[in-house]
Image 1 (cartoon, rainbow over the protein chains, first blue to last red):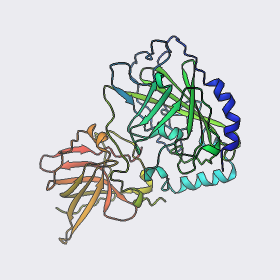
Image 2 (image 1 turned 60 degrees about the vertical axis):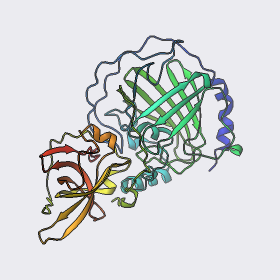
Image 3 (image 1 turned 30 degrees about the vertical axis):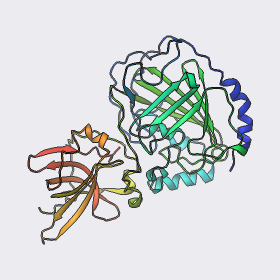
Image 4 (image 1 turned 120 degrees about the horizontal axis):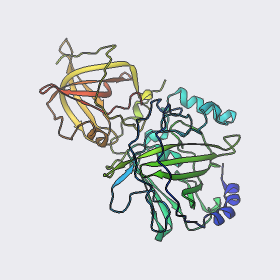
Length: 282
Length: 129
């Protein structure tokens, strides 16, 4: 299932869109902690109250920083959150799981993954967390923008310690003729006000893009929108566009909160992974 | 060091810092099979993605079985007061946790008590998360 046609369709508009507009805006008010429940595979537990936050940090040109302010330590404490369900750290705009526009085959596969309690999740075998999975992989997340390189790097502290690059230089996606589908895909980004918008294609089918186990094909196209309403809060939202798996695009996301004054520790899933051989499921 | 498996031990009030594992808890462990074992530590793997320790447990007939228990990753255990030298080979400990679904002699630890001091530490289990 190649993404050739999708690459060709997306490329022209992405070239235009990737001309970044860096806007200095008044910091948004602090985001109150969501309450209630979380997504399909996520726990249903009320989020604790959040302490008051400093304003969103900004670069000298006014656009927001998605990582540490200069001289500071800290990282995004990823690990919880899902793309469906409205409670916990999840966005109040999320669909419920039974509202996801599955096709019959993808609904059947999703149900099977749930029935077997995710025992076949590639992530258990230390496979890279493509797409939104990177944002709910435990043990930390960092987002570094390097304007001189016109790139954003998104770094996972957990899983197989992966990173992905988001090209901010206006380049289009490659065509499938010169691109082998990958776990992390091909990502291009631009700023829309205070939101980093990342458009990604070129994924292989060897990973689960969300812990819940939503299926996908190589036609997967993701549009991620990342913002930082205050210093301690990252808002992550993604539109899942895979016309071979879902009858229409759908959107979900969650908040991630800041862990101040420390870096994340080294973590390699591969180091002493004993779990895969013990996955029984139901 | 007697084997003690409690079929319905409800363990509350643990000072754990819950942390997501890299895998589904329910696919590997059976929440309906809590275990509580006492024995001497024989090996400690202070590693990612999970810290493992091994403990020799003697049952009432005198037979010794070596059990393996998974805890969270080292970075998550820090929040529960652990260091890599908190538990040493030869220490007699009591572990409370959940048995593996595959029936093997291994499980997921929720808390560990060092019997020499009575100090009880949460294992940052992902159960219920």
